[in-house]
Length: 189
Ligand SMILES: [Zn+2]
Image 1 (cartoon, rainbow, N blue to C red):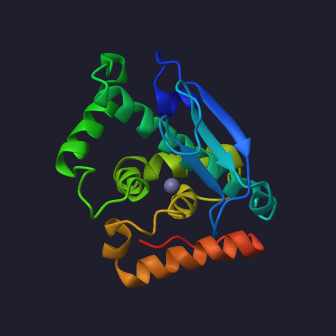
Image 2 (cartoon, protein in one colour):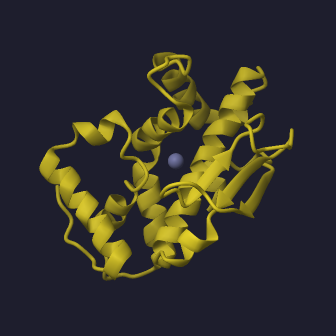
């Protein structure tokens, strides 16, 4: 699954750790150079074990995939800013650079997490859904359900607020009902 996000040719140093995270955060990624990451050669993905313990396995997988995508984006940004982006990064790098130029991170309207969440909605929502379906391996649950779950954690993006209110509220309810009672809600268009 990792190679889907990181490309086949690039070695990524990742460190997983557990810690108590603020608010409702279940996972957090620390890029190289971020406060909380003392390393110069690896990205840290942190998971809050107490919050993870209360989630269905599929939602734990969702959190890890979501954080892996943060790590992937941050790695590409790091390479791009350092001027050592590789052609091996191919399409994902080109898409990221286009987004980077369109929405400069220096723009005070963006914090880095939300900047990345916007990129995630545009390029990874379907991928997250597909990965979750693969992980859950339940032929009775349609892909569109997992694509709804993929929205968790992406509510601070303009793409979420632009959704038809009936749609965003149905997705939100589907996520809550699944997290709280493992209810499989019908998909909405
Ligand atoms: Zn995030």
